[in-house]
Image 1 (tube, rainbow, N blue to C red):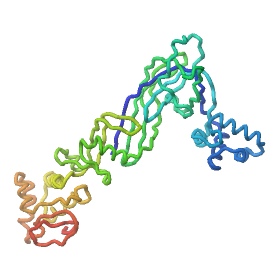
Image 2 (cartoon, helix red, strand yellow):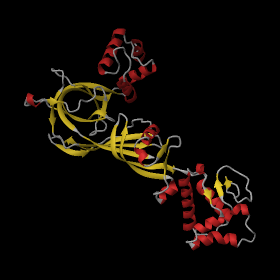
Image 3 (cartoon, rainbow, N blue to C red):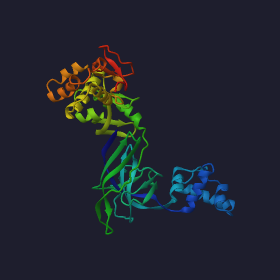
Image 4 (tube, rainbow, N blue to C red):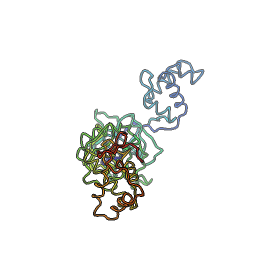
Length: 403
């Protein structure tokens, strides 16, 4: 089962004075953060000296102060999420200040994100009355990857201001952004990606539109719990969701031939919610596992599968072959637990009277058999627990026996 959630996200383009940090290769800081992870998640004097032998206490404290300034550890030396990133990537932030052009988006799944950054020369020709409130305030201290240069990573450290509220110059943009979030329930994994186009500097003060470059990211959503929530909501329009079986119970009426054969159905959910991650419209839900809603639906479903096999593949079949084929088409499927019933031979023939080909394919092997067919084989057969076959005219139970 797979769902694809899509939505359009508005892009804002601003010019703002900011304290930024670009991530550059610093293997010595990466080594320091790796050691901190291995030694209690803390950057201490002893730990620094174990990585940098011969460094005096004062020097080690200076290193810790610098790590704190960069945001690799907190005031107590505890390694931060940024420090974890540095340990993995060997890339550390290099702070800088200036005027930057930022492209910003906001959505519950991706947060307040900077898509790209472009340094600008400071100018004095802007009027103070043109300064506006930030349309989106980017998250501080979070590592962003540029959708213009996929190898460029950066951090918004701060947006300095004299008035307590950061301001900016809002610019026009033709950038577009679309979120595509794929939920693969069977594999129990998800990934989301940003698509669209964005202005890219051409080196002459002009910009040209280019497709975004964004590597898929994952959220780690618990997908089957989400399916259970949807089962109490938008899926109710189509059937009853069984969380234990991870299957939608549906009426037989209206099923397409492929759905009857595969026990899978594709639906479109008009509106769904992922708690804390947004609302999405017209969501295609592909290959939803389905099964019968009731015993009646299961019986109709089983006979439809059986009739399709007999009619589309005409051949003379003994009663034993008929019974075996009915079992093959029902056992191990969502039909089995409803114990569908193969009609007795004469009853089955009556259902095929209008199709002489299938009628004689079923009748001739019994009528022309060199030896009379045993009454228990001619009787009705119900799929279920194993039972000893008798000559009774009552329906028999079947579980692999009598083949």
